[in-house]
Image (cartoon, rainbow, N blue to C red; front, top):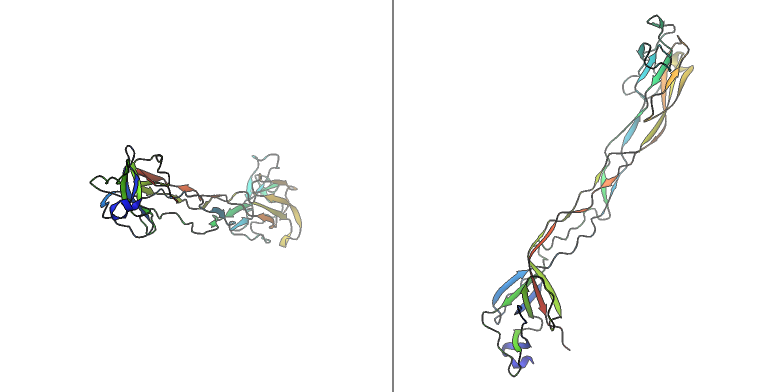
Length: 310
């Protein structure tokens, strides 16, 4: 039927109601200009970007850390069942102690505190876990690609609606039909807003937006502070030089109440050791890797094209 129309146009149904017959071009590359039979650019827009479905799964390395030996060793002239009583004597090891035998702050036998032996019990603080922040990673693609092509990039799909000032000419000998734009894929109808296609124009439906603002992105992967680490130390007190005679001690773990050990009154305290029995690093819970930001779509328009004919 296209031979009935000048310029190669095709006979098509008149645009129904509030719709207008237009030439429509949709391209991913260079923008196509309006044609001679439809020289006026009525609308230019882009479709909605695809959803941002996956940002990558966040994970955390294990932390770097240490289990520090007990740092506070307090000798009391009172027994363990009287923690608030007695005179306290500092029996702490040196700073940055490695746990090997140290005779620092040794207390000779029969040393008196307030008229009674200084040594009757000793309380040893638990070890302390010190761990550095974990390093965060993204599993899979280390740099997730965000679909920003619709923000004016070279691969942004562009739809152009072209029309004319004068009415489309009628199709000779056919009531209710007009000579549409030339070209097999350009004859469509257009209407502002988002609408369903009317009957007879169900070939392709395009919803375009005059304004697309895509501020979506993947939030950065981060790691919470390490949690759940454990460590146990064997703390020992000796009553002879060179840590040669064990007196009291036991296993001390992080987070426990500082244990107290009773000692025979007046016993000489010559030295101490601390042996790391177990250290299990904590775990950092990952967070992030989520879609943040908004996609704003405004000024919609609907283009409906003819169904293909065999």
